[in-house]
Image 1 (tube, helix red, strand yellow):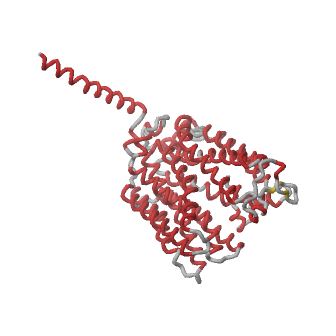
Image 2: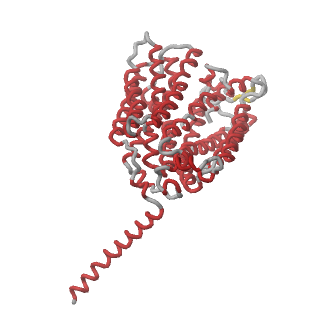
Image 3: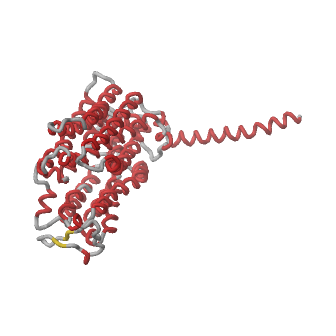
Length: 470
């Protein structure tokens, strides 16, 4: 999915830059040109490039809720495997789809988005089924590193630090199509390993001992351990703690998407660094994220001096409040200190890695057996930010070399982060929510009791009437 960011450079024909009204080829005979190895190059306009990016977000947003239902009904093993196959097949077909035309290319990108929607729900299932209550932080920190790691492997920014696989393939005789063939083949292998090794129930896994199983299930309720397909959607979606978790996710992920997308632009056009320097410096924020995230996950679980609520508030403040303060000051750094601005970008992204010990952990501990649904909705929020971050820039930034215009965006992000963290401070808890006591059986019993009360209320007037007549 992320490979498109780099391959657009390899498959792009510069005619689209000089003529913004050039038509995109709709069939093979409309190809603009080929490179020295005979691979096609296309004249995509900026709008068409944006459509290819947004197609993933649209597919992911549309699939988030249906996939959460499938996860709750069938578990993660085969649902995630199927999503992986969809991702692999759509990736393998992209070179052919690009040759056939924009509509086919967009359809394949939507399929990639649908598959991408399976990621966060799978994280929720793994944490609920396989993580003990004492290891939620470490599980979340490792599992949520996937975006940063994949960006480091496939993103062109990482090419500034080392010759990336994509860069090598694009420049080779195999050309940009080989990027998609390589990623597609790797997906088939990796998801094959997934379905071979993973089981939804630790009790049935041959490598899990009775001692390990007891640790995984310790202090969990029977409903948490068994995890049937029932989900009390209304109770979850109206729970104040869960709403605060989702708001923190919106503020945190929205700021992160903004950083990944626009940091290179700011470094080049505002701080006036060259293209090569921008590549080096733009890679630092993303790479700084991983060690902080892993360290947070470890200390969140291992530190026993403070209770869980205190630790979650502390780590959430590191992830939201400190970046908020730094965003507020970022636009006021004097022009003669450009490296200071780059350092602040790096620190902001690094501190955001502490989110796994904050709202992520709170969401899983509060929702327990329903954490897959709660975490999958963070995926929906992430896709939403793919529209919100560019929209925010479009509203306030008309000249991307104007620091004062960027300053307004920084202030909006700062205020959002601080407000989200403040709400979380009052809402955070490690106690399971009341909706975790709701199961399929208790829900049926509640409906039956409600119906009986209604019938009783209907019978009261007639009984009173008979009494008065007597």
